[in-house]
Every structure is written in C-alpha cells, then in structure tokens.
Image 1 (cartoon, each protein chain N blue to C red):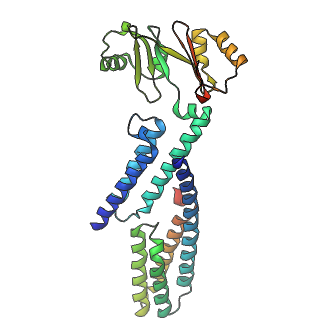
Image 2 (cartoon, each protein chain N blue to C red):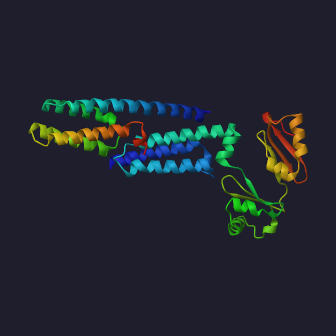
Length: 208
Length: 115
C-alpha cells in the first residue's frame, strides 16, 4: 500500500510537471495533438498506480517521451506549414456573408441542430443575425453577427497565401501586388475587412 | 527555448537508455541462461540463482514483477529438486529455461515484444 501511495505521488508530480511544461494550451482549449497527448498521459499515469506489479518506469518513460514529442512536434508545426496543416487542419467557414454553406456542414459532419445549439450557447437565436460562422481547428464555433463592428478575413498567414479566402473575396490582384512589391517571407499576417481595408503585419513589428 | 532543450535532451536520453537497458538486460539473461543450460551440480544451481538475484534489481526496472517472481519460483523449485535428486529436475530445468527465453524475447527489440 505504501508503494501505491508513493507511486501516486510520483505520478502526480510528473503530471503537474507535464502540464506545466507543455504549456497553458493543455489546460484551455485543446487542439488535436494536445488532446491526444493529454489522453495518453492520463491513461499511462494510472497504470502503475492501478497495478503495483508493473515497474513505475513503464509509465514514467512513455510520459516523458510523449511530453518531448509534443514539444518537438509543436516546434516543427510552427516552422512547417505542411505539418501544421496535416496535424491541425484549418478553420472552415460554415456561414459566409449570411449564407449557410451546406457542403461545409456536411464535410465537417455538423448537423443543423448542432449548429443551432451552438448558436443558442452564444445567445444567438436567429441564424439571420449571423454574418460569418467558422469552425475552428479545435472544433469550436466562432460566430460574427451582422451587428458586430468589423470582421477581418485572413489573406496571408505566416507567409502563406490563403488561396480559398483570396478566391472567395476576389482579391487576387491585391495579393499579386504584395507578392511582387515585397514578397511573402516577411509577412506574418495580412487581412482585409468587408470595406476593403487591408492590414499587413510584418516581422519585427512593422505594421501597415 | 528551455522546453525545447528539455525535449531534445529527454528524447535522446530515453532512446539511449532504453537501447542500453535492452542490450545489458539481454546480456544478463544470456549469461544466466548459459549457466542454467550447463548446470550439473547443486552448487551450480545455487550460484546461478544468486547471480539472478543479484541482477534482479536491474532487471526489475523494466520487467513486470510477475514474470520475475515466476522465474524466482522456478529457480527455487529447481534448486529443491536437484538437491533431492528428484526425477522431475530436468522438466523444471526445461521450464526455467523457457521462462528465461520468454523474458529475453520480450525484453529485446523485436516484433514479439511490440505485439
């Protein structure tokens, strides 16, 4: 029994350390990688507490491995767009300029009832009030109402052109101009709002 | 930055220590297996059992205690049967060898241990 208590303490300290080192995202909204690692770690931590015959290292080593992999994969995601897209996916519009995009709903396996339920959770009781609805990478729904002030569409994120958004908004010429005049490498974020006003944030804090 | 350094160091340490642990564990088990297979006297059995108990602390880092207890029990049984010149001693010796080979197979890096 003493061994189980000590194992429990060790796993508790290890889990607290794990959550701390993996960052606040683990505690807040989880993306796919965070969810997988959190689930695995919690299962692994229970094993040596539950079964004293199993060496405690059989849980500690896999947990440390998962923590390390999570940090390494996060680092790679931040420097590789391909990996980021493969692991996280992209936010998806399901309501665009007040129009419900049925195909997007079907592709993301969201029913109308689920959409209405989410809306009610955000105190919106009439779908016609919604101008834009986006399913985020972590599965949450972000809604922008007609009465809200501005909505900025992302055209370039971290040097990568958001082709879907550019095509949808018909701003290919603007993007071409930016690419020709300054290139994409230094642009962290470029947005355009519904009035056509663009905003570019460059590396080293140079905005405009 | 600290987290990244921690992650890389941890990954390297885990891979290195697990590989080393597997290698040393296999060497120890091979040594004990060799001794058991060449047993002829009661003193040999005692010596091998003592060796196993000496290595057990290292082996128990990564092997289930049930498997270790099983081998320890078989050693005790074999020891008793050799001392009493029991006719079942060869059967027990065979069971002990099988248990050690099973342990070696599961401790190594191969398909059996992964599945």
